[in-house]
Amino acid sequence: MSLITLSCCHPGMREKEVQIEASVSRTDEGFQIRAALPGVEKERISVVLEKGRLIIRASRDPAFSPDREIRRELAAGEMTKEFYLPESIDTEGVTSRYENGVLSVALPLRQQAGPRAVSIE
Amino acid sequence: MKPVKTNEDKRMDVARRYDPFRGFFDEFESMFEDFFRPGLVSGARDYPAAIHADVGEDDEKYMISAALPGMDEENIKVNVEDGILSIQAERKEAEKEERKGYFRREIGYGRYERRFRLPDNVNLDKVDARYKNGILDIDLPKKEKGMSRKEIKVKGA
Figure 1 (spheres, one colour):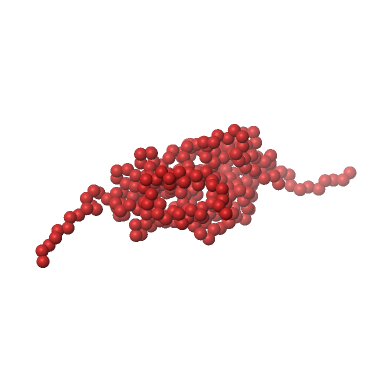
Figure 2: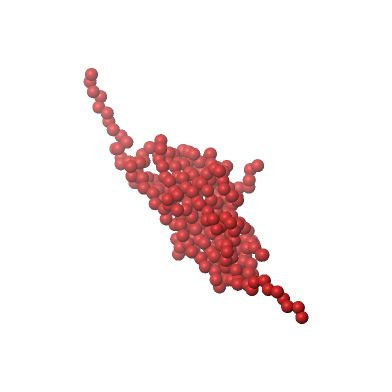
């Protein structure tokens, strides 16, 4: 079983972009990515499948303008996370939803034929 | 062993260094500092992890925006006691996910906690909290000017 591996610090990554924290788990249908995007409006999230990669991008403004700010700990600005997808993913079937500050991306595996006996001639 | 600092740690360091309000809003932070390790949590913790928050202020109120992605609002508690505001939350994990296993885990689960020492001029009767898009927003209205000042008449015997 090939795994989803995570690209980390690949060449060309823009330094200013904050890495989004995400978990990857196995599901009955395939894989699920859950990315933490607290405070991000749904309209400012994009999920793109491109050349065997899944790219999540999001942006968020700081909660308070600088003249009102006492402390800032939350990520703001451009955020990204990128995954290399295994060949076994059915890219047509990828779906995603955003709820309570978490983006979930479901990555189903391609339907494969079950085990079968090969006839011997 | 001191782990390598993550970007998140560095950002927090910067936030601290330039924080003119140090004392308010961060009194209890250091006790959780060593517990917070993004990306590390591979199983249940038996201690609460820290909650990250932005804190702001305008003429009428202080505002806290705390990041609590993926929670249910009934699992978030906000309390004020002895001038300390505490946020406690719990992220539960779906059984299904646990059974199937993780390849990478950067969103933990279990208990989360953060405490802030509040300035004296917060009107505790009017504190308001809302949860939306994974952010807990707490408004802490300031007492009207004059409410914290009162002249006491000295009576004769």
